[in-house]
Structure formats: C-alpha cells, structure tokens
Image: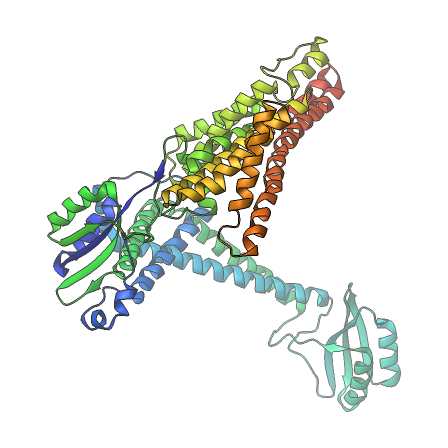
Length: 600
C-alpha cells in the first residue's frame, strides 16, 4: 500500500546483443528506459555516440499501423458478427503469435485488398451522391422537352434560367414579352426558393432581353455538355445510380466475406505496435559502432530478475539507489481492495514519487460515501451482481478492470447502507403490499430511515466528514515527518488536532473544563507558530491568519451535508416513482403501470 521503491539502472553492451536484450526486457516489462537528451547535449558524449533509431523509423511503423487499423475498422463496420458488450483481448501463446506472423506478407496483402475495397466503396458513394445531386438539379426542368444540346438556332437564343421566389414570375414574363416582342418565355416550375423559366429570344434583341434579366435577377442555368432531353438525362442518371449502388452492395458483400481475416489483421496490428514501441524505445539508446548505452528505472523488487537477465545477455550494468530528492517513475502498490480505486487516483494525477499514495486511505471512504448517497439495498445488490458477472465472464485488464471492480465494491457498500436505512427499491415493498394486497408490509431498516430522522443522518455525515478530514491532516503530518520536518507536523497538524478536538468536545458538552484549556493551548499555539516562516509583523498577521483557517475546516465539515442531500434525494425520487406506479390500482392496468415505474 505504497509507492514502489525505484532503482536507477545503467547498461553498456555490445550492439550484437542489443536485439536480444530489448526482446527480453520487453517480455519482462519492468524497466522504463529514459531519454538521453541530456547526454546528447553534452559535447563529449555528442562526439562519441548517436541515437539508435530515428523518428523516420517510428513514422514508418505508424503508417503501417494506420493502414491495418483502417482495414480492421472497415471489417468491423460491415461485419455481421455480434459485437461483444465489452471488448477483451484474446489470449494467445507466444508460439501461436510467432507462427501466425510467418504469413506476414499474405496478411499485408489482405490489408491492401480490404483498403482498396474500402477506397472503391468511398469513390462509389461519392459518385452516387454527385449523380443524385445532378438528378435533383434536373428535376425542376422535367417539362422542358427540347434537347439540352440545342442552345440556339440560326436566328434565336434558347436561355434557361431562374429568378428568386420573391419575384413575380408572371410579371417578369409579361414585361419581357412587352419590352422584347421578339421573345417568348414560359414558367416551368416554382418552389420555395426560385422560379424555373425558359426563354426564346431573337439574337438581335438579346441585349434588350438581358436588360430585363438584370432587372429581375434572372440567372442563367447551364447543363454543360449534356445531350438529350431532361427526361432522358434523368432516366440515364437513375440507371447510373442503380449500377453504382449495385457495385457498392457487391463491394460490401466482398468486405463481409473477409470478416474471417480480422484475427490475422489483429495479430499483425499487435506486432507492428510492438515494433513501433521498440523503435521508439531505441531512440533512448545511445550507440557507437560496436556498443550501446542505456539508462532507466526499475522497481527495487525486480532488481534480481533484471540483474540475472543482463548477466545472461552479457552486459555490463549498474543498479543503484536514486540520489536524494531525485524524481523517479511512480508505480502504485496496493492490496486487493484498494487496487481498483487506483483508477480514481490516475484520473486526476499520480502522486509525486517522494510523496505517499493516498489510494488505500480514500478507497474505503469512497465506497462508503458512494453507498450512502445511493442508499438502496436492492440497487446495490443489482450493481454488485452485474459487475460481479462481468468480472467473472470477461477477462478485463487495465482501467476497465479497475473501474468494474470498483463499482463491484461500491455495489456491496450500497447494499449495506440500503439495508441499514431500509431502502429496497425505495419503498417498493410497502407500496406493492398496500396497492395489490391491501396489507401493511415493509422491510424495516436495520438502523434507521433517513426520511424519518434526517437530523440523525446529518450528524452522522458530519462525523464521517470530520474523520475524513483528520485522516487527510494525518497524512500531511506523516509527509512532514517523512521529509525530516517533525516540528512542522506538530505545529501544522498536531495543534490543529488539539483545537478541533477540543471545540468538538465543547460543542457536545464532554469534559468542558479540559476541553476549554485544550482549545486555548491549541489556539495560542497556532497563533504563535502559524507565521513562523515570515518576518517581523508578518509573523503576528500570519499567526492570526492561520487561526482564521478554522472557518475553512468548519465549511469543509459542513460540505459533507451533501451526503444527506443526495441520500434523501435518492429515497424521495424512488418513493415518488413507486407512488406514481400505484395510481393504476390493483388491476391489470395497475400491474402494467407498476412494472413501467419499476423499470424506470
């Protein structure tokens, strides 16, 4: 239940043994190889050594990983296999892994083929969208039966165009034919945005017609090199969409037929990730023509294993303790109950390597507070059973495992506090008994019901809050002692313990005389020592400022009333929903309504 002690590792070996060492270290998985930028910036080192790998190598592996990942995404998207509720890694032996990768070239060909199918599928989708857009643009002109390639005759121009819907189309046509008698216009269709019109005009009167066009915002429409009537083009486009869609469906079937290749692709993906990581790690190695150098960190308990490995490979090495105050990697070591709660610690930030791991101390309080806030035994049982089954059925790891295991413990806590407070799906037992059996049936609380005695729960929340704060203060004092500052622990924690405990005793009326003197000693001590790091008048001001901090502790304790608020809210909401479910009475309708309320 602490942060693992770390040892510093330095290694020098032959380049010929480098690959073997890297493979074995990666398999062992206990060494963190550090960057050597500080040595490369040193002129003496810079002249003798160079990085073992470069960013280009890593980038090449990233590119390959991206292609395999894309192929896997395509198979997942169009696959028909049932997706698991939780994705877990499939266990495989090292021999099976290596044997499968003997077909690396064939697997890469599968990746290329799947990605080419995906690319063609994207092209078809794009072509279908463009074709449908073109078809939609033609539909308003479907009544225009002149071939689109006929844009003029020897004496006249044929003009297709639109005017805004805000324009009176008939007024536009009348004015055009009035000012340019040698023209003819016809409204084909109107929609919410514009009017679709075609115009025939003598060429020598085109300038006059353009003047009218400009007045009404007439915009010419062009259909490029299309030939045939609008209806013929729409028919051709519909046929093209059908052909493209058919090819698209065929490609999707081909992709689904490749679904069985996903396992090979996953193996290749894992191998490429390993090679990428190895190349990235090798950037932290320094090499000459025949030797290499690396340094890093390892847990002290793994020192013997690493020493044996290095001797087996034939490397010169040195394992030593870090220098005083030197920052090291952080590895949390917790027991079975606390380990799942590391997910909460990591969610915010890992502790400093010279500090302490607070996970064992807050894990129990987290589970207790979670259970009190939900406060329903039945919900707790459901949560514990579901998460327990997930843990048993799926081989989870990492953050997923920690979160599910944490909610398993929180479910047990919820069931405990629900039983203590008498909550079983709220007051469902009492409501069902009264509604359907006209009987006063209930499951009494083991301790008390918060709805009946909220003040009792409020005081209990304050008690838990005080204990929680005292634990935090104690950890702060422990850190001070650990860092060789025992007086800081006495002044910043011990005196506050004395003052806060005495104030609590005075409030509850226990040994008031003793408590009064304890409070005086504690307060005077805080005033005298609170500003010890300042000078002159700052010492006095700092001392009284520190004593004023008692208001902060008071507000912190009062903030634990949120446990009461959330616990009561859960109980009240459950009770309201149960009562709504009873509105249907004892008949069939009532059963259905109660079932709906229960599901909600």
